[in-house]
Length: 634
Image 1 (cartoon, rainbow, N blue to C red):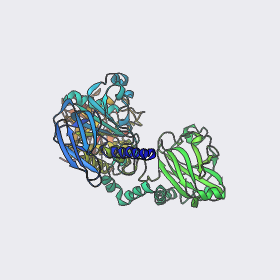
Image 2: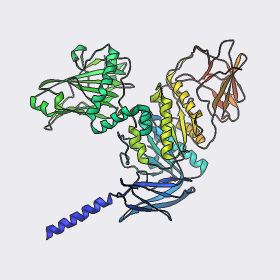
Image 3: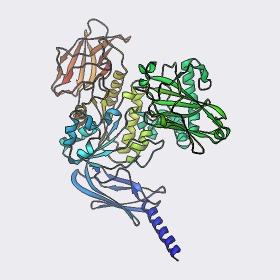
Image 4: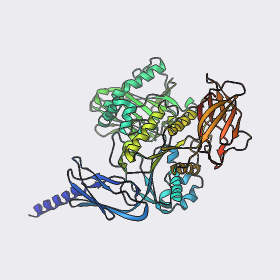
């Protein structure tokens, strides 16, 4: 009888646990959240399939029926801004979930790469700003950095709204926090700031499935889906692209199949290439390098298969065992672990060949030697922390990137960092990115796909702000071609084509030797101005006037001013063949007049360098962005 009673009790407890996990709210709903004002409030979640779900938001009630997949959406009326907290309670059958201390105001998403990720505590005067950051009506949602190959409902870790204060703001995005604070001051309503960014990321990992399919095509999306189910099968399908790239770069060589074709040297140490003294990699750590390690297996070990652990390899690798591709990963913080099936192994000597490609900074081994090992089916491990050889590959370009690539793959960051936000209404979103996409041929198309996906999710009238790339890199005393300048102009043209978008240039706020400038306050202030509909300087036309070219601007207040000079510097005129020259430029009210000096002028460029020196501002000290315009005749 006692055993039966225990069984019944255990069954009841188990049933309660199962029931408790049935009802859940969308990942964005937690205590202290900010609800977007003046929009219907949609509360998404999951319940038992077909179950009725009821909810109250304050005193207002709503009902919905869960679909066959359990998804439901409760819709409440739009609300005016209010700093008076309210509560949400959702019930389905015997289950209920409650969320407390909700405010109503404006919600903004902040996304991008490392300059958006740059923490408030590291910004100029960051310590003081953090100490003074307490504001009960400024709420922060920090999305953890995790990825998924398919869209998810939950974030990759515990994610909850927090009230801004010294204990919560320091690790939050500096640009996002400063912008939210400026909006609080200007609007006087609660502000919710959602931060989801990833250093080094391209725009492609942030695309939703629809935009990803438009960019990559159905074949790439199918390959990504295959990788989610069977990594080795997907790598096997992708490998011919990589092999074709390497063969084309090297005149047909195939070291993965013929390792002895390369000249090998002993690896100095299992550490980054900058520490490999007396090798070329200590001075130039970018490019592709082959790593080679031989391992002896018994017949039984080979028949059972092994798992190969290589630690972190910076940036990307293509790994082969006995000429067979077993893994492909991009990530300077992701440990490699590849299952090697028996069909790729043999009794006796086995060749491990790893092509590691580094694109920036230090490269190669980024883990301690003990993180490199082979695990046999029995659980026994074979250390691989020594005995490596290396050979520098004669490649000039970087290899193709797979659709599961952490920083360039399709939708991986969207799937785990944006998709869980659901259809949470927002006032706007700001994007601080582009460094990793310099010279991406169709960056404009990808960016427009990103914006379209955001608006489909968060509201069709979503405002979008873009930070134009800061000045960074080599200075020049003559006109040059610049991928950074081209990217800046793409960002400008995207905004010009979109009536609900705005540009906040950082062309005057960078640091020539540091890709992460610390002056995030001025960037955020410009974003906040754009968010509030305040026009910022933008070039409009370039028209020939005799032997001069007049460039007109919009968004100028207090006229244009050339700081510390009698003329505006950084202007160029280019002929139809693309030959450019610096041009004298005088300020004329809200226009700039360039002297053609009797030479052809087909285009005007401004700030056209990686790290230009510029001095053109309006009366509010708002900088003119970098641009290129065609010259129209009289």
